[in-house]
Length: 173
Length: 370
Image (cartoon, rainbow over all chains, first blue to last red; front, side, top):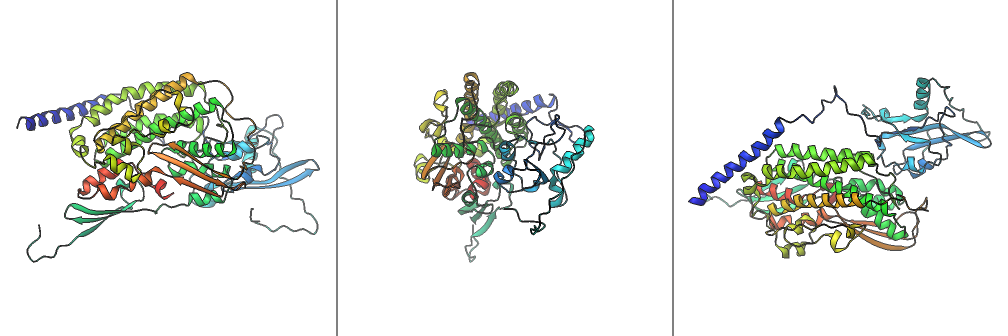
């Protein structure tokens, strides 16, 4: 009988002690952020989709279309098409990532021999269709150059070689 | 009781797969007699993604992001287990600083996992307030890990031979601030949860697992430690730089839900100790081994590496045939073993207690299905 009442008392006290904790935090500053009106800054290591590094010395990207990134990508979502503008230099004609398949491992950025890639700080990436997630890195770079007031890198023309027709929409290997 | 002349009938209740207390897509088929369970049969495989098969179709680096998605709550331990297995296979030496960084981040991730468990488990039991406090604390860890790993949940941070990004002073200061903060919070958790009469009534002497059952079912992690067996891979088969730290393995006495809860809470305090020591002893030096080959092509052979995750022993078994792709990768996941005891301890309990027992196992269903 004594233990019965003792348990009721200690039980009631434990509930009050818990309530005291709640009240303690009730008067403390708010930790939540009202998202659309307030925004947190992204961390410096945040991984958005990849984008070209705008090299300020040359005013353009550093990509040499070696396809290292396309080969290491676990989801095979990078499509690079290079074109030779002179016998020693190769530049990408097309660099497209299908971000919806990306698992954000960062292997492409690490494997790049010329450090031409970095992560963007884009985080509002929701879209209505699959095509909304496809990012054209060259177009992105051009827009970036325009904003910075630099000369826009033109998209190199594909060189037509005689007797060899490449089908459009080639399946990537 | 049955009315005279009425047939005795058992009732089949489907618990899940879309039930918030199953923490994923786990279905438990329950045979009920009134309010009591006579048989519980877990049905798994709803979230099967074929990770092991994926490993056979891609090379060693390309399998790295998968390791963040098997157990999404303690992803860094999986990263570590896989990386260590491949390093063992290829004979890569990891620099000391990288090992320390791995330990710090993996322990932070372990605390995040336990905090999420405490919050979500109490949510199962009907307490909403602790959930918010746990997530508030966990948010701090996610912010810290975000600074170094670049992601908040599905980490892909370790590489063969080290880590790709060094930790900075701000991260270390943040870690120390977090250690002080969480140590101050333990008293609040104590008042709010551990001493709470409702919580005690729902967890004391419920779901008792004996030592003998633990061994018979091959349980690992807080499940086995809650029953009083001090088995922790970090101590029993030391890996990485864990032997250099001074920490204890908390164990329970009775093997009930309360003990498992206490073990996890005390483990967080021990993880904080490890992080503190690692921050103090952090050596300078490179974070990546020299001469890491671009293409990992180990010689033929096989290797097994076990690490302690928040849920128990994770083992990575790799068979190589000297190719750039592994011949076979077998992942030994702790939740699968831990769940296997459910049919035995769920018998003759109430449905409400089943929720409490299932939650205390701390299953991560994607890990079971993998």
